[in-house]
Amino acid sequence: MDIEQVVNLFQKLNKKEIKASKLGWTQYTTGFDLGIEQAYQDITAFLEDEENFRIVCKHKEKELNTIDKRRMEIAYNIFEPFHKNKLINELNLKIRRKTNELSQILNTYRFTIDGKEVTSVEIDQLLTNEDRNLRKKAYFSRNQINKVLIDNGFIELINLRKELAKAEGSMDFVEYMLKKDELSPNIFNGWKDELKNHINKLNNKRKELAKNYIDADELKPWDEEYLKNIISPSLNTKVDMTNYYFVLRDFFLNFGINMDKYNITYDIFPRKNKSEWGYNFRIEVGKDSRVLANVKNRYSEYKTLLHESGHAIHSFLQDPNEIILNEGISGIVTEGIANLFGSFIYDKLFYKYFFDDSVENEFNKIKEYEKLNYLRFIGNIFFDHELYRNNITSLEDIYDIYYKVYKDLFGDKPLEEEPPFGYRIHYTTHPIYMHNYFMGDVTCEMLRKVFCEKQSVDNITEKPTEFIQFLIEDVIKPSGLYKYEELFEKISGDPFSLKWYF
Image: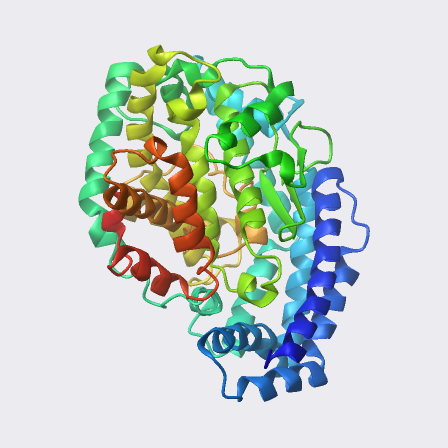
């Protein structure tokens, strides 16, 4: 291989990343930091090493075949930011330290309601309660973390990221992150206009449902989970989650995927000092993948397990020897595949393990509503953007930005209390990332439509094993070879567009 030296570099880098990922798993599952900072410093030192970068630059200039050219493009993009100037390296180090400090707070923080500590899982369940005042109290309990984050340097973190973008020569941190993810800087241009009619439809639907189901003029944020429970009460069915693995294993066998062959570790029940979000830790591609979740015996919670298991299985369907190309896989592709498997919670292929066909009608209704209502998630995406496009000096500035985004997009009025935002860990640990979920869903819909047209079927569940082969051959294998927008167009025949979602 013409680039063997570079491959060797990435094998060494991969070992350091595996160590950091294992330490991340420990921190998120126990609350203990056993050396994450040092692990990331080791990675940074390796990337900053002048001799390592010289090797990458030397091989990048070689006459190479198409695949090796792409490998070198990915390699160069990873190393090059660490060889611009000292200021950028210092900023990256400060950002990593502050992010780690704040994530430690987020992972161990617990909300309280009426002086009693509650988990996020318990809050989720309270949001389905028929007592509207209790739902409201549960919803606003999540704003308790806002000031804690600010007091511990959240605004400082935002400003550090702004400084980094400026030092990198980007217009703002949003543009910097999009470039880093190999996405066009104008990828979001036109979204507001393109979605306007659909958002009008959503707003009308929400008013109709509020009137019909809760005798209210409008649907408030604390009504949403309760409404879903009314439309589809089966979602809130109590189930025994102790046999979760066997349910997941039997489901994935429908696609010809035997999870018993894969080394997937699960940690799914809540406890003190454990992160209350859902994650997949891709420790080592094709060898070690770990799923963190928090469930409490409700059928709806399987959506998270399906999503995170989708991530894990995706890791095992990749070629572990393609260390460099795997680094070039877009987060949109990984979230799209995970969202695709998460969506099966409403499909007979999965619900057959719990229900008979009597749930089909309610699941079709909730699936249709959730798809439309998911447009509100775009508010999170644009709010994240605006944090880096406005001058922020206080928590009140953040609230002003929050209300402006949601007013412009959905016509929302300010809430009666401070809006919960900080509990969503992405703003702290994964900025300018949430578009991966929505664009992943657009990709998911595109894949469904392309496959069904090729196979002359109405649903991918008619040919599940053929669908997995399509996913492997047309999506997973080439996903590192192409930038996201190129891959999307290669599969669909058209440039990326939100039209695929509808």
